[in-house]
Length: 355
Image 1 (cartoon, rainbow, N blue to C red):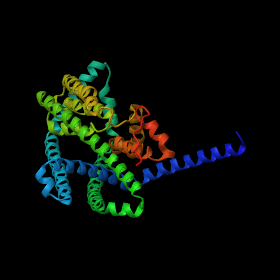
Image 2: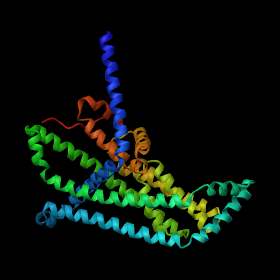
Image 3: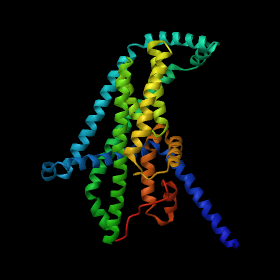
Image 4: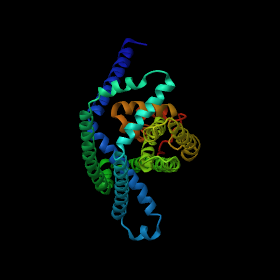
């Protein structure tokens, strides 16, 4: 290998690392703007999926224009979100009304833990709790809720403008690519991304809904307070690959200690809800999902870790849809195709055929 060739390889590697570091820095510092846009993009994909279902109705397909179909899908999504918010607020009010009971039950449970462990666990826990600044914690929570409300408004604006942009996108595509062949390929690229992400979101929502419903009935059977709240939490956390189901199992199990003041309900909830997570996640979900996403299991874990480190919990939830987008786009770019191969399940890609 010549010195010039080595110098070229080093320069290429340096440029790649510089671009990678710059991209990560931009993603971290522009989280407040990029994350709402990605969520809006996912909502846009969901609207597409709902619109396709609306078109399955012959009368709606003949008499309902595209803009009205999008409006109906958009209204349905917002109604579902409002219902979920109402259920959460109702459940939270019920939980807040029993705080004194939960505090006394926590003391009893800690005494039981002391007896089982043979050491004073309570004093260590209280010394840790005393260091917490509840005022600062409440202030942080209020700030987080304010940010969520602001993001919700921003997401709403993004979705509206995406729907408006969709109507004029074909004309822009004609100006951007004079060749009809390139226009068709670009349209198929977007359709492929739309299909893959919409399919993932639809199937994942159904699987998460099944998990939430089964967990809801299990929690009712054990008499857990606010079962709707915990079922909704399980439903949402199930969108986080791998660790989401574990966290979703621990939350209601730990709450059982606060409600009953005993360790036995913790074990019962952990086993029952955990069994539901195992059966749905390892038996039903693989059969429903299949290998349609074409993503390596290792890549799912890595993307979960990387996007979680960059954007926190929201990054974990968005990790799979973002990876799907990356695979679809990279497999159509010759210089980046190797990345799509590495991200795929078996190294097999389904690139768009040339006309």
